[in-house]
Amino acid sequence: MAERVDPLWEMVFSRLRLTEPDCGLMLQPWLRHVRRHGDRQVITSGVRVLSVLTPKAPYFPDFVTPPEGAQGLGSALAAIRSTPRHRLRDEFRRLAEVRPTPGWTRPLAAGDGESLLELTEALARYHRAVVEPYGDLLDEAVETDRVHRLGVAGDVEGVLRGMWPLMNWRAPVLEVQYAHDRDLHLNGRGLRLVPSYFCRRTPVAFADPELPPTVVYPLHHDWTWQRQLQSGRREQGALAALLGNTRSAVLAAVGAGATTTELAERLGASPSSVSRHTTVLREAGLLTTQRQGLSVLHRRTSLGSALLGSN
Image (tube, rainbow, N blue to C red; front, top):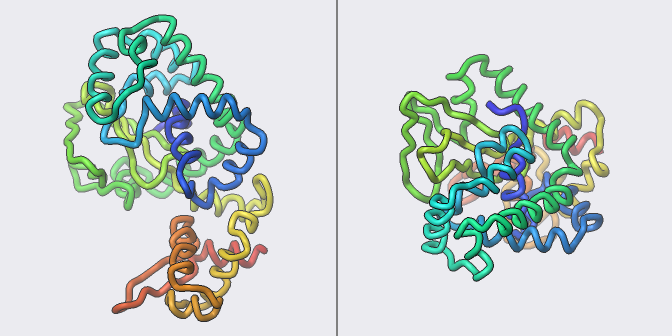
């Protein structure tokens, strides 16, 4: 289990969070800060490059997220620049099969040294603007996730079982819900688990089975909330500001438990609007939802009650 995030994977996932309609409740302060204080030209350029090389598709080239990222950003960028030409050619060919590639990628696919240098310089600038300023926050979240998983489990079997619901451990197989079916055989190799601050919902692995077996998984933000509440810290503003007035009202209106229809009546809102807010609150670990016949019952978690009480 890695002790820190991988800088290249964080760039890939942060680009997704910057360009999706809802990046998640926990990431709202980061998103607002980046948009207000980040270098817009650098971010736009980085998003453009990453959108092409790492599209939201069944495949993107592994050379963009080399295993050397475990040694830090410098090692990762050096690994990108030294990617063998035959590998670049093969990976860009495969990328073109799932998503058309623009003309500027052709020198990269051919292994042109100057183009690879320009790519890594653009990635370094993007990292300085989007990821690096929040290093302390990422480190704290990773440490919280790591301590919790290792402390609760105590052994490898426990760690793997504790990955539920992200992964399902059925010895000797670790199952991950993913859009495309594939098997990765370790053949005696170890499996490296890498936590990610910006990854959401689904863990990701390298496409090439010959690369070191690695699973990058979204760290558990619920524990980050708990740590902040317990320590009385307020990262980038009060925690209540993360919710907004409407979601705060939804969280309070749940009371001892309420259905979507009941919440809509209490708040004078439409059921569809309430449903959107309860989905966000549930993803943040503040509500649980349980189906009862044709209705769904929402309840506050202990974390949701603590957050509500602290404000």
